[in-house]
Image (cartoon, rainbow, N blue to C red; front, side):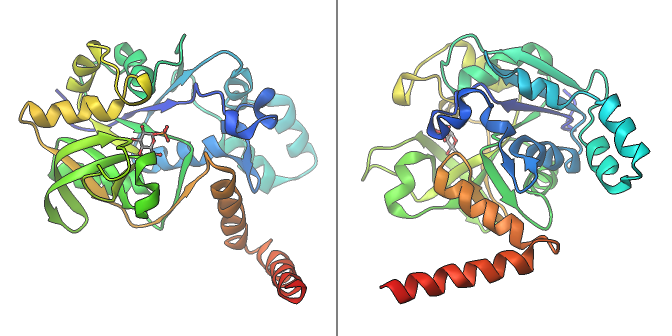
Length: 297
Ligand code: G1P
């Protein structure tokens, strides 16, 4: 089995119901953070970590997502003609090489574990990454790259991990810690969406995974778990019960839950403030809003 991770799965079959009606015709992953679709952030993070093959697990209605990665010769020619070099560069960066991107359909919404399992033939017998594009992570060194470096020293399934407030833990996969080494923790158990009071810790799984191909065998059983869905968390937990190492990785960076409206808005503000061309205007506006809000109280 080769050890270098060059393939990533992007589960993008979800209907995006939390963003209806916007997602009635626009896939959630195409919604933009400042001026780039959410999926572009995930792709860039994957590229920085050395990923060469991008596998999308899609569903009906995700055509716009496939189009987004196509070359756009007319648009590129027009930008070139108008001398808009910077924009041309931006657009070219979104192009994917022929054969680097593959789409697989998940025909029924049976859960994240099932979505990953759908890509088993494209991954084959090698370790791979999974990126959930809803989780956007702003970091100096991209989160997946941090994990790939840790994986080189500690081969074994690895999940990104972050402490979350106690009252939010039951929305996540949660780690039961064996040994805590700071960034790296070894894990003795994992629970998907534990009932309040039953969480083994408040260290939650965030949507970045490095997985060994054994996971596909675990997912073969199609065992359902939390919410009646086939859970990736359960397939990873099975690794532990079968005696293999599983790690959590406390990444450096700020995570935004762009699957929720509030998280998406926070990410929008934060990413816009980090842009020199937008920062001053937006900051001025935010100060005004806060002052008006205070005056009204
Ligand atoms: C999924 C995973 C969960 C993880 C979360 C991170 O849940 O099943 O283990 O903690 O992503 O965002 P979802 O948010 O799809 O319900």
